[in-house]
Structure formats: C-alpha cells, structure tokens
Length: 228
Image 1: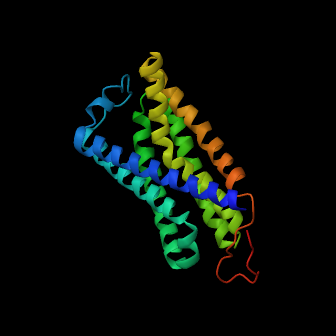
Image 2: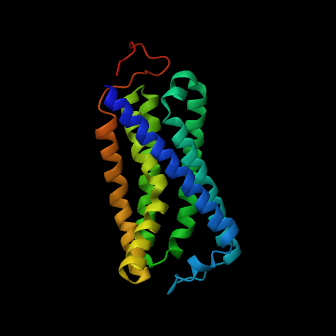
Image 3: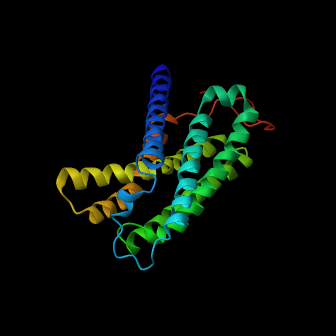
C-alpha cells in the first residue's frame, strides 16, 4: 500500500515537472525564439498545396495554447486531493480538458495536410486525432455511467496523447542529430513511434499505478466508498 502510494506520488510529480518544462520550452520556441516557425517550416518540402503562412501560424498558435491548457487541466484532474476535496472543480476542469482536446484535434486536422514528410504523416496525424478524441470521449462516458475506475484508465490513455508533440520531436532529434538519419524520415519514424509509445506508456501507468479500485465514488452513486 505504502509503496504504491509513494510510486504514484513520484510519478505524478515527475509528470508535472515534465509538463511544466515542456510547456515553457514550447512557449519560448514558438512565441519568442521563432514566432514565424521558420526553422520548422524549412523542413516541409514537396507539399501538394502551399502554406498560407498567416493562417497556418494563427492556427498553430491556437493549437499550442489549447494543447498547453489540456496538459495543465489533465494534470490537475489527476490530483487525488482535488478530486476528494473539490469535486466541482474536478468536474468543470474535466470539461475544460474536453474542450481543449477538441480544439487541439480540430487545429491539428487543419495542419495535418501540411505535415513534414507528406501524406504518410498526414494520415498518421488524422488517425491520432481520432484516437485522442475517442479516448477522451470514452473517459467522459465512463464517468457519466459512474464507472470511476474505467474513467481514470481512459483518462490516462487520453492524457498520454497530450505528450505527442514532445515525443515526436524527441525521437526526431535523436534520430536526426544523434544518428544522422535524414530529417523527414526521422520525423516519420517519430510520428509512428509516438503512436505506439503513447499507448505503451499509458498501459504501463495503468498496470503499475491503478492496480486497486478507486477510493472515491462519483456523487449520486448508491455504492459505498471503495477503499484502496
């Protein structure tokens, strides 16, 4: 029991640190260092349609902002203290997460045809968008049915996709800068590798952390409190 709680707390703190550091990095790169995304756009070759830069940039900014909101909202709702003591905040924040994911998916859908690496990556991004939205809706449906355990497991799977961009660029950086793989190929491997990695990490977390029933049941449930 003690080891499980300690492991859960350590993982939660690590997740918070990674999320905050990454959000600061993304904000600096995209709004301060390279607000025109010149470096990123330089890798987009052989596009079938031209990038309308002002529109693309505005969509990208909206995408980044709501991706950060989703990352923050999701992290907050994994807090046991907030769930126990501030149920209304947890619920409202959950809908904020849902809204943010919807905006992220829509903006990503607009940018997908302009993906680095061409159509093969455009398809992958559209698939990931559908999966991301589907996992999030599944989590909402489960809590509406008062199934807390299923809800939090689906939320773990959904939240893993908040780190999609980070994993893609990490894999791309390692392959391109570390092993000299051509950038477009590195990016493609990063996209498909991240799709697998998101699912794998989510299932690892579920099997290592959520091994016991939830200690809290949703309001309105006739069941008694379940202990961890």
